[in-house]
Image (tube, rainbow over all chains, first blue to last red; front, side, top):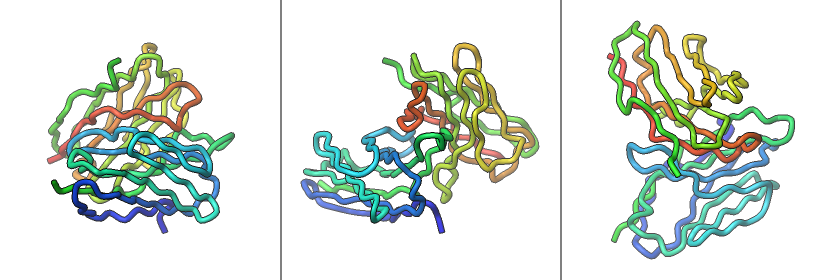
Length: 114
Length: 113
């Protein structure tokens, strides 16, 4: 079993839709949860960063972490064609367990159709 | 502010050769990380350098090595190239003690023939 599971999609939605992207994980030591966006043939871009459980909002993006269920989500409101990309979740441990290593999901490919 | 830069953008080598990839971090960042993104395998952690020292390495053979220079730039060397080393190699950087917020460069696409 992989440490981080993410549905690869592809996910296709019409412009203006609310998009929900999700990851599950098995390692309860994870404390930091990130979402990256990667356009084709580019490097990943850090979108959101959350510590422990809770919600975080930034413009059209909302990240949620439920540590009790080992489940994280990224919501995109009023989706735009420019949001079409691969979305990667990433996680790492905290405290004395810092290793510099981010554990990534496989990525979900999103297409927003005009 | 300039982001993480990597060179070259593309590299073509043959089996058995050596490849050298370079990375310049964001100004003020002292930690540099290397990841491999191979088709179907996702991003895999390779190496972490901080203050010139290797702090951690992922599950890769010793022919993957690197170093960090006094100006915090970094080099990844891959010796005895194999076909399966073909991948996008990504460099990321972060502030000290902020390993959770890693900012990535555009990557070097390595093709081994």
